[in-house]
Amino acid sequence: MNLDAKELVIQYKDELIKDLMGLLSIDSVKGESVKDAPVGEGPKKALEYMIELGAKEGLPTKVVANLAGHIEFGKGDELFGVLGHVDVVPPGKGWTSEPFEPVIRNNEIVARGVQDDKGPTMAAYYALKILHNEGYEFNRRVRLIVGTDEESDWQCTDAYFKEEEMPSAGFSPDAEFPVIHGEKGITSFNIVQSNLNDEFIDSDIELKAFISGERYNMVPESAEAKLKVLTKMSAIIQAFEGFLRKSGNRGKYEIDGGFLKLELEGQSAHGSTPEEGVNAGTELLKFLSEVELDQNGKQFVDFADQYIVGNLNGEAFNMDYHHEEMGDVSVNTGMINYTEVDGGIFGVNLRYPTGLDFDAGIQALNKTIEKTGFTIEDVSNQAPHYVDKNDPLVTQLLKSYQKHTGDMTEAYTIGGGTYARTLETGVAFGAMFKDTVDTMHQKDERMNIDELLLAAQIYLEALYNVCVIKS
Image (cartoon, rainbow, N blue to C red; front, side, top):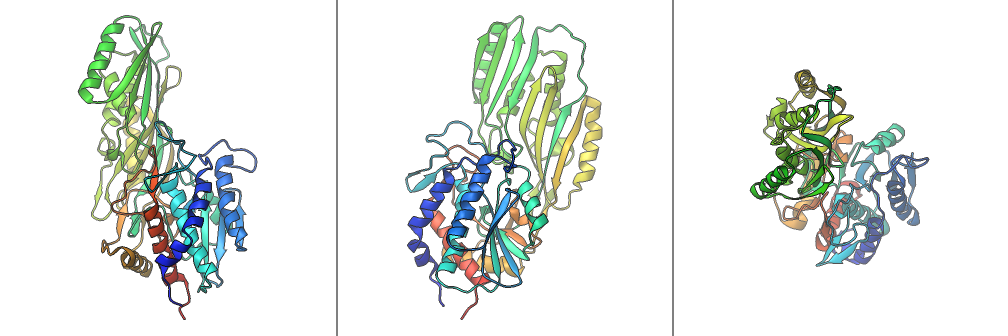
């Protein structure tokens, strides 16, 4: 049977969009762990929504630990995987419409998760559904594997693959086209202020609290500091206003008795590309470094000035490194918190190419910063992932992309992390194109409908080439 991927996707267009709008209507931000919902009720509901779509088609489905599940197509001993996720990052502020009430404007679907990763996951599901419904015979089993904790701790894939079979190969529709054959190592860790001075020392300006950011892998878009000011209130306000004018940042202040609250706005971005955002936390710390603070507040701000502010490539950690294909180390300090009782915590997301000895680097950094009253805690580390660009999987997927776009761009590597790294032979495959505006993890996240349909066509072509018996 021949395949006209474009025509088939057009036939299913309305149904695809309807099902996607339903999925986008579910607030699937990670929530409180409760019975039968380890990462919250929202992600569980989104998982059930996807699994039910497969069940309605009469396909074999399974849910594992209410963290992940699959819809299975075809028969055979070999297993091919398509891995997507339905959890999303918090929406943040400043949306022009409700983030979980999807709308279509200017031929774009606007909703949290439409680019990352509900839209691409639905496009891949429809590619498989179309092959199944149109009578194409699979040459192996193919599973659409759906996770619910990709944006945080990957409990979903850990639980799933403890119980279920590991595919021999596959792809994740959770990045960019044409094909991503390598991903940097991804780490997160906390740098904790561990040596507070318990003896009260009178100071004109005391840092009472500081808060910025919600996730390791998001550039914070807002920051807030609370100061107790005994004298020189007007001078500090004038200095803050001058800082805003000089830096170009947006912010405001509020006086409540002897307390001064400072707020600053930044620009969110994905943690793998911190240079594309404006970290509100580090920007506000720049101002606080100009203020005569109490001893513990000064220790917190001085440490940030030396090790955190402006440290986007790991140089301040002595962990800067470059790889010819995979690029440079990147550092995003996604969470910054301080209280006068507990001190400060910097939540760091560091991504590194193959070749860097991360374990040695983090141990050396911990030894260095102990002298300044800080320690490193809660280290997690996913090693870099790499598939040779000449692997048959890479070349087959690349041909499918080229056929439908005419773009001859080669496969490449990224700093982001996708489910592809859970497979020995796994790659990331779409769904953003080279001219797509990346709105992942940002306000008014959106996906062009024409691009959604084109992605579905490419997935359909690729799965036909790799997983269907040719007559």
